[in-house]
Image 1: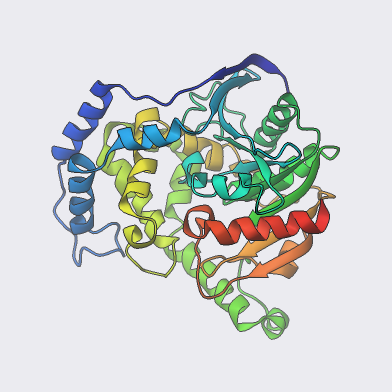
Image 2: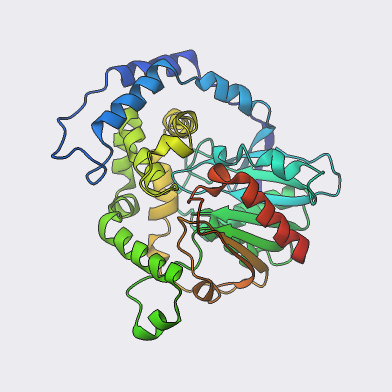
Length: 382
């Protein structure tokens, strides 16, 4: 892949007109009549949405988010004609380990705001130079210039970015979609990617376990089989839609901030720990609304769905080549990975089980623990 436009400094700044328009649309929300029960079983309860809408229109301060983001160096580069936005925070320790962090859906590069200072701190050893790209189709890595942004192509672009930044040897970490990009970077850039760390999504069990598998599974592993089966039965609908009709999502969400909020809030609630807790309890309303606002301002609902689900849907279930790099993984309480299943695809050298806390959005929910586990892997293999 090639750099088709050199990096330029990027500053996040929405216009006053955009912010005023968003607030006006939220205040003018056209609520439907509630369905029977009006609970999480059919979507986000209208009472929750109404409360979130009031916070969004009257209290949430996007300018405060922008002010925080101005403290993080950000850039816009073009790779193979595609705009790629990234944050690049260097540690004060000159020989810090280069690290790329990759987000997933419905997240964004905002997931990593709390973990960056933990990683760049030279007093924690080892320290990291942190690179956080926005996946093509997300946030400011928009618009999509073409439709061929598979996981491998995204990984190739990120490897090219690390080379362009002068990092000859680096580590990559990812969760959700990023847990697929990270091993792909290892396969595609074997001479420079030195280690891989993932959280949550690797080694997920699929289908009903047979008797042999049941006998060798622990109680935690059997519970993960159960939760995956329940997910496929009651939650898979969003994948079916985003992988086949991402443009429908794009049209609906780009014209309706409350639709964007409901679509994302459903997953922020479903995938955080403790199970079935209200979403703003652990993540906080400002953090949730920051993500939703970022999607809204960048009109990226459809393109994000396209990259993560539609562009890759034809390759689901395929068996890629196993990367050579050592892999570390941490599974928090909400996660679903099983080590022996993950070892079919990667070489696990460190596997951490956390069964009593933590959810899918590890960098936001448990940043200190995620940073510590990543450091432990690097200490082991770097």
